[in-house]
Length: 264
Ligand SMILES: O=C(O)CCC(=O)C(=O)O
View 1 (cartoon, rainbow, N blue to C red):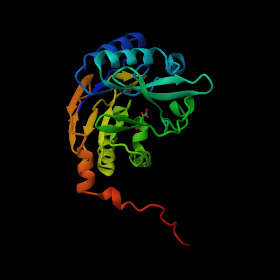
View 2 (spheres, rainbow, N blue to C red):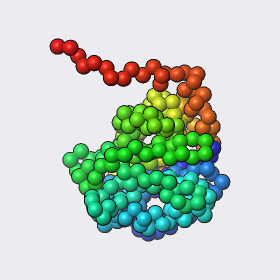
View 3 (cartoon, rainbow, N blue to C red):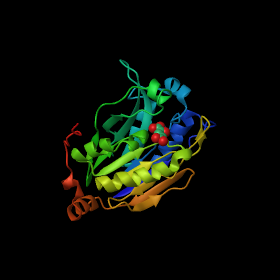
View 4 (cartoon, rainbow, N blue to C red):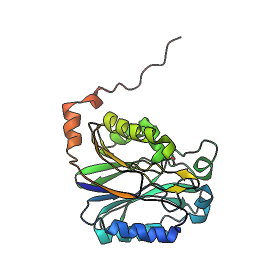
């Protein structure tokens, strides 16, 4: 299976419209890959809080339209990263869109863990509640977004519903790049799954982005890692390695659930 992670540079000098067109063209150029992955909130930037409301789109908005077409033009599965979604009956959501090679929406995932503590996304957006997996020929994707990476129980739940390849679009800041790399490897090792983690490059809202998108195999080996700038990271991997790893080193079978609290 060939995956291409497009680590988009999100800078304020470029308008959202031109970035959308540029990214659609970049997706089209990945014809021949099976799966293309984009980062989190690449239209606005994950830290451009004032832009969320201004650039929010209905689910089937301009980014949806452009990415559905790009996926079908290229004939690829496209995890189109996330957009600020305006729910007509509710708040904004940080919503990821996954398209099939014919341009049909295969899944939408509303980010569960919102970043910012008492500001930013955590107060501006609503929280998703639903686990999302997508069946592709050869593997099942489990989807999560950026800050979700810090919550291992989410990934365990995805594994419990069949995830074998964990896809994580992000807008991770340079300041915590070490956490990004470490957590991507940890999620791969503990879940015996592939991790495809696609971040942004550039600087927006004064926050330099980490770049360094990364692909990790179920044994924790880094198959490919991007540099700090805009880049397409292409990697070939064998999804069957998940089953082989889980069979040869069956640690997931040794889970002990429902432990008792300490006795007083
Ligand atoms: O957890 C982090 O350090 C970064 C998270 C983040 O930037 C986000 O979820 O947008």
